[in-house]
Length: 458
Image 1 (cartoon, rainbow, N blue to C red):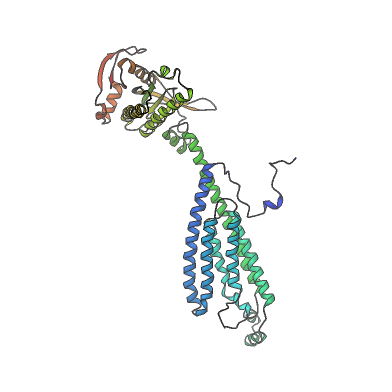
Image 2: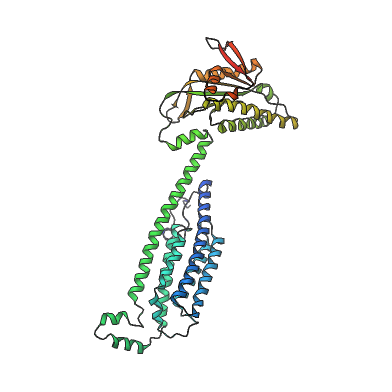
């Protein structure tokens, strides 16, 4: 038997065209890499087209003769091949994409090594290498860093070095030196042997050819390492997005923001004034009796989704689900300037959302859903509880009062019941209009409360 987790064969560890090992099951990594590759290829192709146009103009300046059209044809082939590369590019290993990259390098090499067939100029083949054409390979390498993995960038450098070296070696082997030119150069620079060596028209200047490919490989490896660091940063950010998304399944957005932007934002236990909202479906036990469990769950999902959306829309924190209800807080984990108003606006929006939902349910022949909402404003203790698995907790009498106000909604046959403390806070925040339609009930005895209190009922 073979171990599926065994290390890859030694030869594969150094095979640069192997794709990077990414967690493709992570949709955030996949999306980030796909977006990066797509945008990178688009940018690389546009940069290539611009570069080819600039080089075409430059070649006219360097070689102002009609035979320069040969090199313009090579530039056109490179531009067209770039379009094919953009179409073939994808995340991971793509043999077609690698083949097209190789075609790129072959076009470049042949265009520089093979003499221009349109010119009647007679010169030694070795003089083709006196024009420093190799530097144009850096354009292809630089464009590769915009879209390819570090392995592919180094592969471009390796293939370029191999093709260029093969090109000049074959050219040197096939070339026919013009002996008369060498003799005249030696005579012209007699007494200056170093100058004569440099000016030798039939010399391929092997040292310079080796220097070209070595420097190119160093640059390719350096750029490859840079690309690898960038890709690691990209995948790390994708992992952070995944963690943030996972947190958002259990915490409200403002809690996730507090957790992600600070080191220990929730650790310190503190007391501050907050608004607490409870909402619960009235008569849910009777509603669920005798119904299909799947239908009951779907109703709960629809209810929670609508109510949760209103909590988040009004800058609230979803503290917990309570079966057929939920508890939300406003002013946690960080207090705001309109926490009371946000809580009351959320309660009214919840009531409206349930009304809209009930109109849909009536059209479908389904029974209506009634809910009671209770909101209170006052001091509460905030902080993490637990040892290994921490939970952000809100405790105190304010929470108890809000829960009891929600329960009183059945007594008053009302949709929303709020405390006078919340009413005062809302008016202090300039949200008095939110109190439209509320009726005051003075000296109400709330079960569990020692003293009577004023409440407002909608």
